[in-house]
Each structure stands twice: as structure tokens, then as C-alpha cells.
Amino acid sequence: MMYLFVLGGLVLLFIGGEALVRGSVSVARKLNISELVIGLTLVGFGTSVPELVTSLQAVESGSVGIAVGNVVGSNIANIFLVLALAAIITPIMVHRNALARDGTIMIAATLLLCGLLWFDQFGRTAGIVLVALLIAYLTFSLVADLRRQDATADMHKAEGENVEAGYGLTTGLLIAAAGLVAVVVGANLLVTGASTLARSFGISETVIGLSIVAIGTSLPELATSIVAALRKRADVALGNIIGSNIFNILGIVGITALVRPFSIQGNAGAEAMAGSQPVSIISTTDVGALVLAAGLLMLFAMTGRQIARWEGAVLLLGYILYMGLTFGLIPQVNLLPSG
Image 1 (cartoon, rainbow, N blue to C red):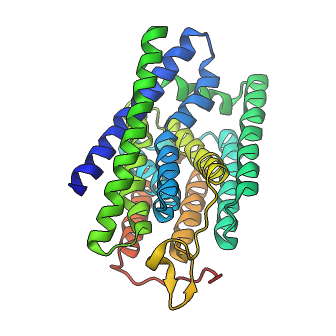
Image 2 (spheres, rainbow, N blue to C red):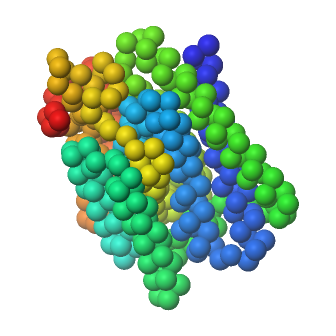
């Protein structure tokens, strides 16, 4: 039964996420909202809704490992898996001006998340700060893009144009609403199934969150990026990944902490205990993979005019090695503070 819950949850998250994005984009187009605004807001936030709902439901049910592992694992998978596959399909052209702004913000957000993980600061104050930073980023980006109409604006506009959605206003609203319901139900099934799966096999919920749940909630990004790559618009995939990672950190972690403050030390059961001392449920390896993924993305993108196929293969190899570490096939050491 737990397998059906996990599988059903993943399917509903994928279908619901796609429906939510397509329905919302259709409504926005009928309201004459520009493709630039659609790409920067609806596409970026829409593809992150599965992560958001899953993390909220996981924290609400006490499965902090799934909630945090979902965000950390999704950001790692977005680069090491999704972007890697897109680059292998077709080399990704890089617009350095576009990368300079959004890429820098992604790096800054990643380092901020690392700091929050290190000091275990996921209270409402942190949530307010993260959400405020997200609003500031969106506001600044919209104003700058509308004013300059440069390569960055073109990239965000292409993200909106990449979504095929031409429904009427009423149909779009119904599809978006149905997609949201599917995401909520799917997230509930996935969290329930993943928790049961972890207990049955003696695997920590964090490992399940970093792997199965993270990959499942990244399916909308995977679908969008693969479609863009097949259409020879892999630069859209790069913008989608960077935007999604920013939304995941500032939006998902921020909203989750704001709605339901949590701790990653000592409150996730036996998986978070070492003797009588609480330890972080997110290991040094997880944080290292998070930083390495973001760093390699920037390195590969800045050292040439494209992310080549061999660089995509390197990223994919990184994900394979990381999964080996996550499931204990390769030993790892946890150096995060013990409270």
C-alpha cells in the first residue's frame, strides 16, 4: 500500500503541477499579462508549488526530515539531474548578463540557506525575512526587466512563452483549481507513503526526502526543461532551474517556517540522535552537495558561452555519487554542530 501511496502521490504532483501552471498561464494571458511577468512569477512559482505543499504537509505531520530534505534535495536534483539531462540533450546557451543577476541571487540564497541550516534557525523571524527577500527579488526583477528589456528580460519572457496554454478564462481557472487540488492530495499521499516507507525499511525520513520526494517534486522542472531542450531552447531550462532554486529557498522554506516553525535538530526522532546529543538531520555531505551543485552551475556557465554535453555528464555523475553517499553506499561524516 505504501508503494501505491508514493507512486500515486508522485503522479498527482506531476499532473497537478502541470495543470496548475498551464491553467494559471492561460488565465494570465486572457488578462493580457505579459509573457515576461508570466515567466518570472507564474512559471517559477508554479513549478515550485509541489515542493511547497509537500513541505508544508510534512512539517504539519511532524516529518521535518521530509520537509527539509525535499527542499535541499530538489535544489540539488534541479542542477545535478534536471539541468544535466537538458545539457546532454542539447548544449545550453548562456546569456552572461542574465546569469550575472539571477545566478548571483541563487548563490546568495544558497549560502543563506546553509547558514540557516548551520545555526538551525527556522522560526517565524527567518520565515518573514526569507519571504520579504523573495518579494524584493521579484519586485526588483520585474522593474529592471521592464525598464531594460535586455537578455535577462528575454530569458524570463521565453520561460513564459515555453508554456503551451491557450484555454479560455473559465477553463483556465477550472484547470488551475483542479491542479491545485491534485497537488494537495498528491502531497498528502506522498508524505504518508514516504514516512511509512522510511519506517518499514529503517531508512531516515531525511534520506527519503532528499531522494524520492525531491525527485518527485522536481518533475515539473524536469518536464519543462526537457521540453525546452528538445525545442532547442535549453537556455530557458537554465533560467527555469535558477528561478526554481531561488523560489525553493526564499519561498518554500520561508513560507513553511512562517506557517509552521521547525527545527532540524533533535525533533525528528531516532534519526536525529547520536547518543543523547541531538544532531542535524541534514549532513555536511548534503550541504556540500548543495553548494557544489550551485558552484558548478556558475563555473560551467561562466567559463564558456554554453554548458556543453560533457559538462552535463559531469553534473549527472555528481548526482549519482551524491545518491551513493545518501544511501550509505559510500561512507559520509556529519560535521554540522550538535546543538
